[in-house]
Amino acid sequence: MEHRVILCADCDAPRTLSLSTSGNLVCSSCGSDNWMYLPMTANIRKSFSIKGDLSVKEDLTVEGQVEGKIELNDHNLWIGPHGKVNAVIHAKSVFIAGNLIGEIFASEMVEIKLSASVEADIKCPRISIVDGANFKGSIDTETGEDAAAERDLPKADSAKVR
Image 1 (cartoon, one colour):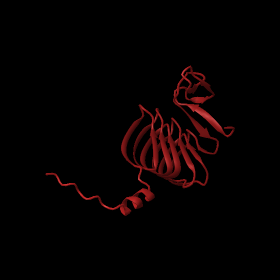
Image 2 (cartoon, one colour; image 1 turned 135 degrees about the vertical axis):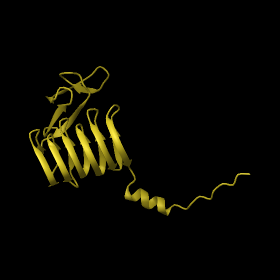
Image 3 (cartoon, rainbow, N blue to C red; image 1 turned 90 degrees about the vertical axis):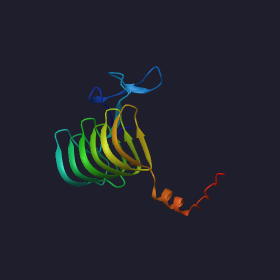
Image 4 (cartoon, rainbow, N blue to C red; image 1 turned 60 degrees about the horizontal axis):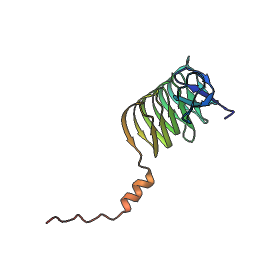
C-alpha cells in the first residue's frame, strides 16, 4: 500500500480510511465509501488532455482527459473521479470512478465505482458494478476457454411434448 494513494470521490482529495461501525472502510474525513486506490505509477493529471494512441508498459492512472486508444495489455488502468476517457482500452484490469465512453477489453476484470459514468461495450471475464453507478452498454464475460468448451459440448436432444 505504500505505493498507492486513497482518493475519495466525494471529498475529491487524497485521504486515509477508517473503519465504520458497520465494519466497512470509509473516508476518514467525510465517511463516504466511494473511494478507490490510485497507484503511484504513470499518471495523466487533471490538467492533461491527450488525443491519439497511448501505449504504456506499466499501470496507468487517468485523472485528465484521454481520447483515442489505450494499450496497457498486462497492466492496470485506473480512471479517477475527474478522469474523462473516450477510448478503446486493452488492459489487464480497469477500475473506473470517472467518465468513460468506448470499449473495454480486459483480461482479468472491470470495476465500476459509484461515482462512475460508463457508456461502453465491455469484454472481460469478471465485472463489478457498484449499486448506483451509471452504466449503459453491453457486457460479455465469455472467455475464449468458455466459448471453446461450449462448442465441444454435445447438443442435448430436444424433449418431445405429448
